[in-house]
Length: 400
Image 1: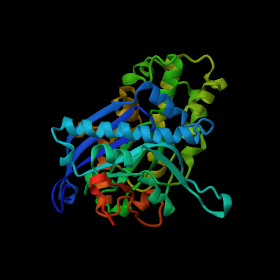
Image 2: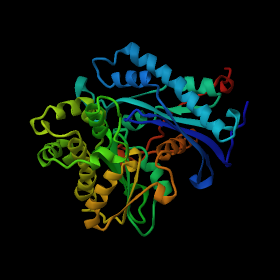
Image 3: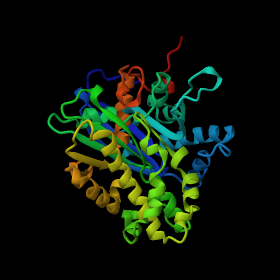
Image 4: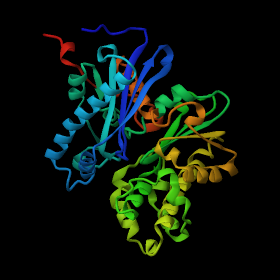
């Protein structure tokens, strides 16, 4: 039985699979005193096509039957365990040399607004990827199911990464925007010299989600994303379609706010492609317009929610969308009038791909210590929660 490390460097695996369902991001990090973090290894393990298709079926209530959800919860546990073991081996370590695993899991449904049904203000969320399976296969304590603790305290259960962004990126003399562009876009605002309670964050709207869905539709499934924004670069923005997209009520909702595939997923894109404004538009123009929507939504969020409070100096983009050169150009053009530099995680010497996996390693490390690991100023919760549920491997159990 391994001894827990106290006050020393901990090796922790963090894992994440996002709304784009591209695969499992796994990072092995060393965490030292003061949350100093060193990335030892990173891998992305794509989902097998058949598994990816089954995951997508769980985003629709009519096909997310309890047997399918239960099966996928355990199957994903197996896949996450394999990803953890793989990234540990890549770094040159044995599983018994790793102290902890933190896995966000795969979100299949997120309902952050209180329903009001049955006399209770119920908020709920569902992430799958069974922690007990990960712990059993790796022999390593595993933290999963992070969001629910925040929601139990009245929060939206998102965004969670701002907690780690504050630890890693906060500056004394400049306000920094951290923009993740995954399936959904989310922005974290780190005011210059700010305290944790000064940080605010929210989902800006669709990141890659609509772009990816349009790409699949116009290529007949031959492409699942617009690599580098190459197709969008060949098109022109259609003003009428863009205006219709911009009219979605989400963009003007008050903070805190989060969104997901329930609002901007495949059903949304299918409806969009059936609009009169989309008829007769070339595939390239459709993608140019969808890409412009993402750039506009990020800039609009800055102008609407951030600029009235603080002037930013820099926007650091991460996530898959930061590899879309067309999208980055449009962001640079929209932020230039505000005097905001647009850079990527890679420009800063970090990894866009590993960023969220590293975040869940840090959140798991905090949870294991019984320390708060969320910013209620961001999620809207009454107080800071210790998020996460612990699964112990067989050798860690205690006999009563």
